[in-house]
Image: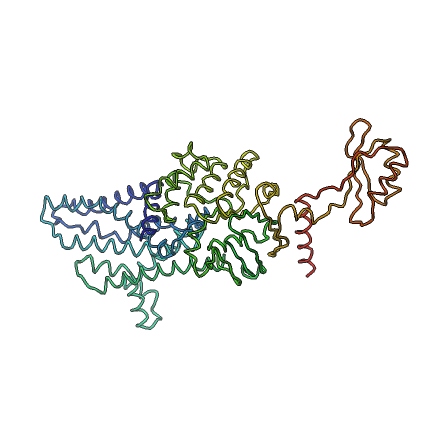
Length: 244
Length: 316
């Protein structure tokens, strides 16, 4: 616990010491507020956060890999990974510390957007249920995307490669959430496999949670998804001890 | 304190370590010497738990480095080759991080960091970002990181590489000082470093240990094969007579008035060359002021052992 907290603190600090925190924060918030505003400022529009959350999964595809690409790749490139792995810390603690740091950082950025529903709620009748659910769904999806990006970051020494591979993975996972896309690429596959593929996309679960439907299966999905990639991440690090 | 037994490590098909064994007693300062790629860093990486050995065992303080990896890592301070640091951090933040992650209790953090800072003379740069530091300071930060938790064992991989001569002297002094309280293994290319600060030398080559002894005994074991003689007499004549007496190359290497110092490469001969030389001088009515066997340097030992090993490896 202590070790995880120490790693978490250092990683978080490192986010704020690099320009990435500010570039990420400003661009993400700017873009999201623009989307929210452009859908709200129409005549006859009801007070909802649809515009804000509607394009979020898409924006995430590009923003999340930027947040995670450096987590391991930078340590490998600068050689600090060797130092890190000779500290009396378990690999699981290293991974947890870094994962939580990315989560805390993102949650802090997301917190800034909370002014939006607060303002809306002050001037109009806002249905808070879906808003809170959508925020929860956003955090879950962020966790999923961070675990993917972190995994790929552990595979490469170069941050840009980690970014590109993460982006590709996430885009594919996003697209298979759309039946039309899935049909187009899987017409030759048996129906069962197509269903399985469709079930892999985090996008679907994001939709269902943010509609305010609380289904345990959606949460289990995110848990398994993150667990899978974080465990794969641990395997990659462990393998380095064997290979050298 | 450190026991290594038949340690092997393969990188794919390349055999980096072919079974090395040695022990280091508490308080010893051991120099790990060898050409690039000899297996120095690999050994250190296994001892510190970064790499797993392919075969063999290594233990620190009786604890196996694989089975009790965390406990072993708690007892070690490690400075990897090329001194990796988080360059965006400030020196004090970095040292605090290293101390905390190694489990220095919060109440002792301040004094532990203070001690490391004092030993490594980092007071002036504490508030600076690591990226702004000179190579010498970076190296000292790396050393401070390795000692901040007062480990029993210090493992330093080429602690002076890339430093200028003044910085080398400083870091060497620091290591000497640390050697008083810690068990130290350091690897290096600089033979002088070993001569100055190590009580014992282990020479590795091609993944094998080719020598393991005190510096003095290593040097004594390798006769240099040359005699040094200081003679008062006509130089040309002395040289001619020498080469008639002994079938070897002789040369004058220093002159001081009419006294000349000669170097005679007599080789490994068991013949009493000294005596016949003295008789020759007396017969010619010259004066023999000094006669001694030339001391081998650690450099000679290193070259002869590592070249031998690489020749054998090529023949095999």
